[in-house]
Length: 119
Image (cartoon, rainbow, N blue to C red):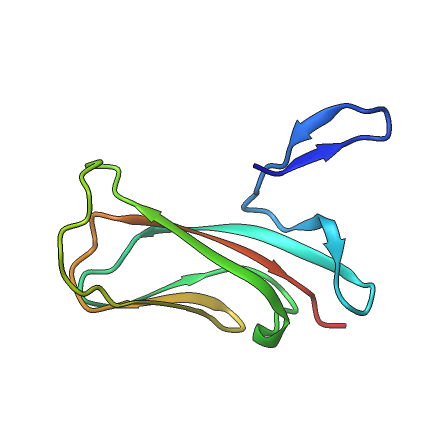
């Protein structure tokens, strides 16, 4: 859990948003602002590929500082079954992409990105 402390000492939990916001915890190596955004990916694909637009203007893939994927099944809390799972998440100038090798369409994913904008 990430927390922000105001100048007056008030503590509040950082909230990821589906709207772009400035990442308040650090800056890029060159001192410029970092930005962050949550992308609700929805259900993972059945075997194959799914693309979801991230809606970030001026986005360059090489400027991604952090890319986290959180995925879960709202239908069950059961443990993983044994097997080999291939999940590949990528981001490009316009989309987040997921490739997989088995039907995981009952799972949903949320992507959290921290990135630097192009100048």
